Amino acid sequence: MTGAAQAAREVQGSTALAALARLGLAARGVVWLVVGLLGVSVLLGRDESTDRQGALRAIVERPFGEPLLLVLVVGFAGYALWRLLGAAVGHRDATGAARAGKRALSLAKAGLYGFLAVTTATFLAGQRAGGDETGSRAAEVMARDGGRWLVGGAGGAAVAVGAVLVVRALLRTHARRLEGWRVPDRLPVVAIGTAGLAGRGLLVALLGGFLVRAAVLFDPREAKGLDAALQALAARPYGVVLVALAVAGVLAYALWSFVEAAYRRTG
Image (cartoon, rainbow, N blue to C red):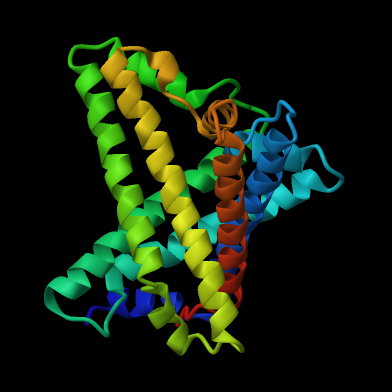
């Protein structure tokens, strides 16, 4: 083992990095909690932005909002670093293809949380993005040669990923992870995880469905962010019920994030 690899493993297993990783999971919970609460406003007929930017805006407008956003940035960055080290030297309990797969997943999550850290820091610095980002980006892509197929393919992939997430949640694969987490009462936590992870899958599939619709109709306006998607659902027959289920799933996922922050193994 090289000195660099040994040093990376020591950092990955350190108490300080474990605390940062837990802070990142808690930060994810805070953002999804605010998104869920803003989703309640859609049910009440209010015009609120329920995407991640809307959540950050709702946080920064509250007392101590800016210090809280700074904590979120540190948490997201810490979790990204923990995942990055896991991709480099972690998952030593697995071998062969299983280890490679776990390290690849850690690398993907490191990129995602690094992106969250950067975009949250950018928002905190005052460079706030407005409007429906998903729709505007879809419009840019569809204006290019082959862009319609790219948008449709991305939407189809999102629907497939969302379906897989829902199936995994219903199969309660997350319950196996709880065995080593020392959770005081597993039964309600498993239920929270099932609802939250299924809710996340449904939202991913929902956004993918709107992308597919935009590609089929060749209309970028049909590609919607989370806030527009929920509002579009609420306007349809039985839409309020579907939005209520989506909001409940978001809130459950926020609770699951807090469970992970408290009990997940980081060593």
